[in-house]
Every structure is written in C-alpha cells, then in structure tokens.
Length: 264
Image (cartoon, rainbow, N blue to C red):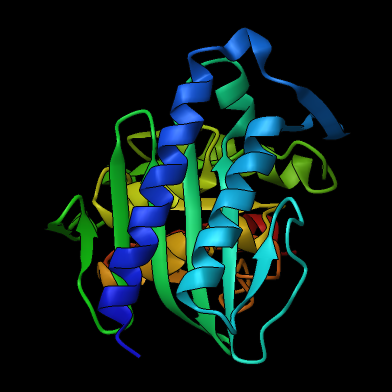
C-alpha cells in the first residue's frame, strides 16, 4: 500500500469536508444542536460531515472500517479502520470560536499509519504517515526544542462529563500555572496535539478523551519527534482515555509531574 498517496487522497476528502463545515458556520444561527450528554453537543454539521468522510474514505479503501464519533458507520474492518472525529471542538464551533478541527487517522490492525488534523479557522492541515516526516500545509514540522517544563507552554483540556479526578486535575492546573510559561485550554484536543507537533505547545495532557480525539495527532507528533504515553507512562493512550504528549526533551519530567499528582 502506498501510504503517501493514500494520505494525499484522504486529505482531499478532508479538505472538501472542511469546506462544507466552514460554509455552514456562516449561517450559524441555523445550526441544529442536539444534546448527547451534559455539556456534550452534536449538530447536523457534525453528522453530515461524518457521512461525507465515511463515504469518501470508504471509496479510497473499500475493505476498511470505522471508529467514528457520531456512529455514521459501525462497520469494523478486519485489518484497516479509519478513526474519525468530523468536528473536534463542536462547542467552539457552535459559538463561532476557533479552533475546531477534523481529525482522521488510519489504523492497520493496532498500528497508526496515517494521521490528518485539519484545523479550519486557520485552514491548517497537519499530517503524516508511517515512515514519513510530519507536515503542515506541505512544510516539514518538528516538536519544540524546549528543555524543561519550567520553560514550556503547556496545553490541557477541561473535563466536561467525567469529574471523578477533578481534585487531582486542579492540582495539575495549579502546578503548571506556577511551574511553566503558562497553561492553555483551546477546546479542541486534536488541535492541541497538532500544535505540539509543530512546536507551538511544548506539551499536552488530558483525561476523559476518546480515540477519535487523539489518534491522528498521536501519529503526527511521533513523526515530528515527540513522545506519548498514558498517565502511568504506558501505551494505553488511544483507548484508555488519558494522554501525555510532548517533545522528547521534557517528556520524562513532564510525565513524572503528571504521574506524581494524578496517580496515587
């Protein structure tokens, strides 16, 4: 399989879907909003965008299946599965606030082989495939060279349904406010991770996530020279609901800071 060509073809489908999403934003007052759960929303835009992605990606790789946020397709492939979030940052989108992004990854059995994050407000497409460099709109990108947490800009996401770890999580917020260049919360995990890949953020951590939030970004960061783990320092970050991701230089220190507070 030519992963470079497949990634390019998939980016075309993602770009077409991004065009639809941004066109709908111009008539934001007419967006049909449903409540999936507390502080968890879906719009007709999410659903239509996911159908567009499923249709296009199915044509590219007919035997593939899907792990998709809105459940447009529940078919699982024996070998290949696309992991897609048609609109990461729906709450931002509803309010007309960037960032919001499409996240598309391809898994070959358990291995990530393609990752695409298309942030629509700035029209930035981050991507990589197995064995490649990482790219932003055709230019190679790398994680930052920051050497300590104290000199880092850190990103996180606030939980909106699972508040069981809030006490510990708020301790991490205070720690990084006091011991880094600052803490940011943008509202789109896929974008946060892509920003680690290009060096805008030095590290990112969050709990309560789903595979479609992180899969594409994980591959892009790895190909950009970064590292990733769950809060225990293990590899259950795609389906385990928690992730720590950063450049290689601060990773051990960053992980230890989070582990010390969150794992007791």
